[in-house]
Image (tube, rainbow, N blue to C red; front, side, top):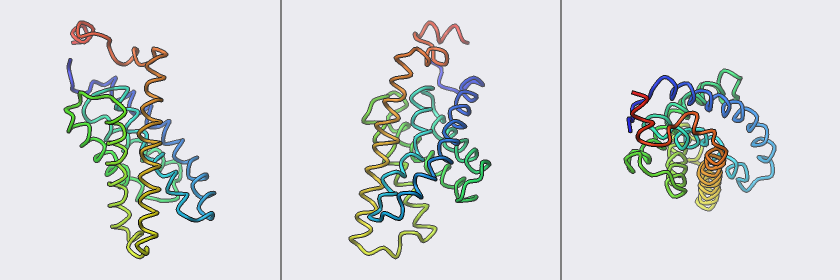
Length: 192
């Protein structure tokens, strides 16, 4: 199986990312709607912003796809008028890179729920680093920080881990992924 990205892989990844970039913009409305409720309920929703990389990786199954998907989704979100401005691009790079590191650690050979959850958690860690650099969490009291972290990790694992995994599985079951991913090693050799 060839692991380098082909033009088709890149284009499919970008289409997936643009779809999620639109979701990200719409998701901001939901995020802001629950923010006044307190207790960091908004952080439970934060993991949706990490889903593009995981879904794209589970569909394309090649190195670099998660990073490309998160960068493209963040770019799409930015171009559509993200309320976070240019920081959304930095967040996309970091979140995609951290997810990519998990897939790399498994040598791009594992496509299970555990790996999806680990990639989601890694993206969460990346997002927390960006938040820390922006000074968004430094002043939280220890109990409040613990609640913030718990909610962010739980939401990340749910949306970018579990939901992403099962979304890719549903697409797999419908046969859609057969259009972008050959079924056998013989199919792969025919593509060269």
